[in-house]
Length: 254
Image (tube, rainbow, N blue to C red; front, side, top):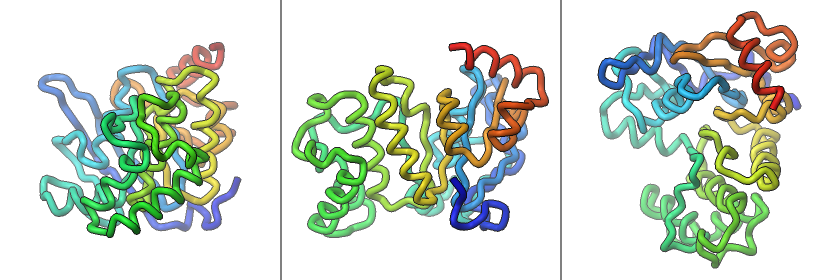
């Protein structure tokens, strides 16, 4: 599934240099160095508590970091509100628990951020939202409320909502882990469609089949550090580190 523009010559979209983060005395991220190029698809995997979610939440300032530097689309992320807002307009995020507003319909959930954050008209926001709901194959649910939908449907709405901001990067934080097994495929199929279109993506997931099919690189984390990264063919067939081999042995048996 090649990118239209080879990842090795594409411009960097996300650069993390020597990023470190603490929660009090506990160090959650250790010397993170990672570059994600435009159009590249990255899967982050590793045991629970390894820092995967913390890492991607630092990219759009949902978590702050104490050392190092993060750049998104050339913008340096720091504590400046203008830089944070600019980066958040470029970065969409999909969470494990959907985070839809329960008092708004599916359509209203998708329209809210573009109207408030970018100032487009309600009619333009509605046209955009309906088009993206069609893309994720859930347009017939536009007038329903989140509680009336299955978990898989809610997650597809969450993806459409993030896409309504027309981001250049999509972050996925274990998007299928809260779903019943029969609902996982519909969400993964939506994500595969995004990958086919060349969306820059970082996905925290234990879905190794998805990683094999979609990822340009798989990054394994443990104890807050990047232990190993490689293309899927190499990562799954010839992992270099004992911790990677142990993780794969456990997760592939499930």
